[in-house]
Image 1 (cartoon, rainbow, N blue to C red):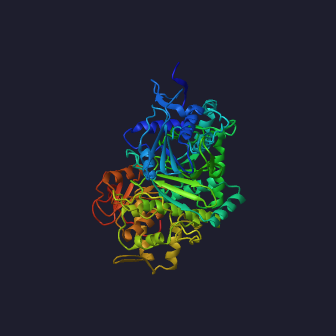
Image 2: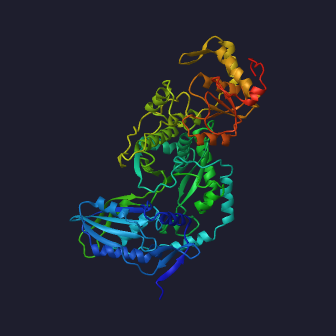
Image 3: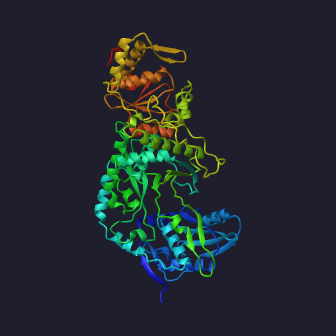
Amino acid sequence: MSQLEDILPLSPLQQGLFFHALFDEAAPDVYTAQLVLELEGPLDVLALRNAVAALLRRHANLRASFRQRTNGEPVQLVHRRVEVPWREVATADAAGVAAEERARRFDLAAPPLMRFVLVRLAPGRHRLVFTNHHILLDGWSTPLLAAELFALYGGAEPPAAPPYKGYLEWLARQDHAAATAAWGRALYGIAGPTLVVPDLAGRPPTDPGRVRAHLSEDLTGRLTAVLRARSLTLNTVIQGSWALLLALLTGRDDVVFGGTVSGRPPELPGVERMVGLFINTVPVRVRIDPAETLAGLLGRVQSEQSDLFAHHHLGLAEIQRLPGLGPLFDTMTVLENYPLDAAALGSAGAGPGAEGSLRLAGSSGTDATHYPLALAVVPGGRLSLRLDHRPDVIPRADAIRLLNRLTRLLKAVAADPDRPLARLDLLSADERAHVLHDWNDGTTPSLSSALSPVPAPPPVSSTTAPASSAPVAVPPSAPVPPPASPPALSVPPPAATIAAAFAEQVARTPDAEAVVSGATSLTYAELNGRANLLAHRLIGLGVRAEIPVAVLLERSADVVVATLAIAKAGGAYVPVHHGHPADRMSWVMADTGAPVLVTDRDPGFGHAAEVVRLDGGPPDSPREEAEAGPVPHNDP
């Protein structure tokens, strides 16, 4: 008789996890999940081990190995029999045993991809460490298995769950063309990926650091009431808030991140009792309009995501190929709402031959992803937030700051959901002081601080503090701070143009001081005259509405003159920072197609633009020199 019971295809996420497991077999496998159960009372060890063996008999997919056919197609091979993955140790260091189990890689070709270790702490005190590869189970399935395990240990025979194979068959029946079209529409027009760590490629995976925060019962209640009044879900507010945080981090108004979906189709009978990997990670695209209110944004996000609900089964790799941009995101969110009923499992009943009852005194779980930032939210009387971060690229202090900002966003939703996005302020008092004072001390800012919408993180080093599960201090009753000036997301005032508004100010106060930079002081009239001269020079070089003009200037009054002159000419300002490598500056020039470069130095990098020197140094634009003549001083 063949040792194989069945050969099955892989679900979309199983395919992704299979790829990650084979990509670097020497690196840690972050997709090793774990559940630790704390047991108190008399324990029949043999009965518990037999219950584990029964789980493997009841669920064929738990006996699967994963291999590739000769054509490269991955499949899961269901074996008729596998050895019970069981061992027992006596030690007080249960945490060390659990860490050791997490560090041991699974060989996907050697089933079963799960292990049980019973740790004997003391008489009547044990911990059962259940470790599995994520390719077998999702977070919903793990507590289902725990409930079955305790029922089997107590001598009961739980009703048979529908087999995972039924879900794979359901997947094969779905309308692939309709799903592809729906995702194509959802991602149409996206300009590029949303990456918080663009240079992550090539780094080996690493165990994540973890920071946590808990909302107060009062704040959780107020947030729940606001969402209920507007028919919004908790997952919607998490996704909308994360999108706003990403917009501030990346400077984009069209962001994408990963969202974990349950993947359990309601039309499949008994799907809520099935054991296997059903979840999928799909892109969540959110466009930010500063004039929209918080409630308006959340309602729109919920509507757009609802339209995609029937197409959550399509694999992420295939979805990301549609816009042709490669990986679209490197952050993700998940709402962990799993059916682990500790009360129901609290008394497991006596095993055969045991006196009294075995009690589940507690449980804890561990999982991870390869993303540099992953947000997990657990509902309850106090909403729990956990931000996993890669400590090699995002230090713990930065992760704490991000989680505190997210908490302030949730407070803003609970306090005033009709507040326009432009009036949100996510900076703490220290961060606001850093932006308003530390960055404006008259010195040239560093490249990271000049371009970053958040305070620049400390440099990454091997001495980064280790991750900890200690809670982040977030005062539950702290009021939402007043809007900063300017607000984090700003809406242009209803004035005509910058040039027109400036002309009105010149007319009102021509002799008032407008710019001070070191020993240089310009009145509004003087600033207007210098800007007009430069604007006419730019116009003579072909600058018109929407024509990009590159600017490479040291911080000085010339920056104000150039910015105003470009606005007067109708052009678009393209900053080039002198701290960039030459290749980067050349790329900016080529990518924007700027035909003119305004500078106060010899550029020192390759470009094809006309050069306008503000320091009087040679060479000015050859075209400007050839057409030299009197330059007017009037407003263009």
